[in-house]
Image 1 (spheres, rainbow, N blue to C red):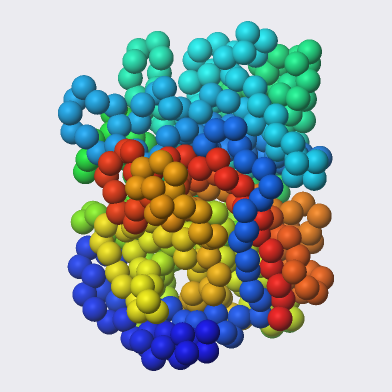
Image 2 (cartoon, rainbow, N blue to C red; image 1 turned 90 degrees about the horizontal axis):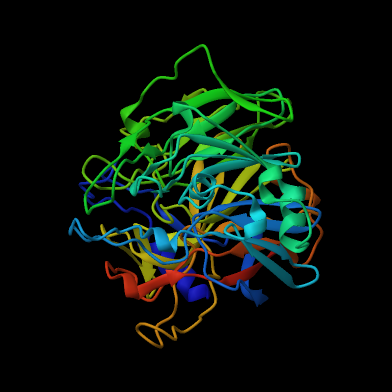
Amino acid sequence: MVFRNILLTALLITLASLYGDNQTSTLSPVLPQTPLPFNVNIELANLTLPNGWHSGSFGTWDGKVLLFAGRTNGLHGFDDDPNVNNFPPSQQNTMVYVIDFASQTIWQRSLYDPASGLTQAQIDTLSVTSPQCYQSGHTLYMTGGYGIDTATGTMGTKPVLSALDIPGIVQWVIEPKSRTFAKYLRQTTHPLVQVTGGEMFQLGPHQPTLLIFGQNFTGEYRDNSNGQYTRQVRSFHILDDGKHIYVAPSEEEPLINPAYRRRDLNVVPIMYQGKGKSKPRPGYLALSGVFTETSGIWTVPVFISPQGKSLMPDPEDPNTFKQAMNNYACANVGLFSENSKDMYIVLFGGITYGYFENGVFQTDSEIPFTNEVTTIKMNRRGVFTQYLMDNQYPTIPSTFTNPGNPLLFGAGAQFIRNESLPIYQNGVLAFDKLRDGPIVIGYIVGGIQSTLPNTETNADSAASPYLFLVTLSPR
């Protein structure tokens, strides 16, 4: 390991090559994890989902995890044949899962269950791909997502805001004689929420809801096709009286920024040190994402305040951080240390522009799947560095296409935080309060599992049914 770290350090001092289609022509160095105050380890959990699942929504309640929406197949197709739907409606996920990690139990129930009380139109809105969601108390708010309109047979992004009562739906899944699913669902429509592939947050009950980046994609997907990117941080309030929900747009229209043409990215809660001896402040950081106008990756992160104000550092400044790896939406977790004032963001696999092969940094404009894990660090002065972690996803050989190839995980997966751990208001883990020794910080659920780094063949990937246990060891 020492030799490997020395090799990496020697090779990664400068990565100044031309990456023409990307936001910037250079990437910041990817360093060995040696300076970091922790290790992470990923291991296979003792239970698996009944079916593969990725790119959906989740909420938590009373030690249980609720999963719905998303897809049951792997990477979407790239066929230009007008008779082929590259996002087959038959592979939209119409199951609702409840996971109890403590009792090692998984329950499932179909949205098509006669006792759901749902209309076909409601089922369509609850089985979409890549919606945005966040949880406030016992309510999960979900917007948009891409999917079928069964009544017309057309594909598109839903202009729908849903409010789901998590305890009620968990009970509906677990107890067959409970009230209908529809009793725990409220919905409204508004053009502001017609977004897929973005992220959504709210810091607290009196703060605005932020709908960050993403796109409105209309019609069936074709290779090289694009939706209408929002290119903005949308800010609005969700008015919820317990019976009805409404979207109340902010008075100030958010600016459109061409550099915010991003979707399928990681937007992560962060804590950062305020001026002087003030307490740490919460915010959000939009990392990388796809695609530039020339089908490259974005490399410079965007800072976002809880009120929706945004700032991107100058890409032309040689001191500006340029993200090199884990550029697509993947499982992730954030940790902040008040002692050192350092913020850490751990990105677990997924799809990447940069990767390592035999200790040597490589790039691939096809942005391949990867099992590698990186950590992005922001120190008290706002200076970023990125590190390759020693551990990655465990080796699980494929038993379907390309048998024996190690499966590559993380894209479209969700990180489910250990609810017993101390956190800040926006969900960032309080690193200084974690106990010594290996500690379970959460689980990685679902995602795409690919048998090859690069593929445009549907059979080469699938939705992952695996659950992974993530432990952190402070050092």
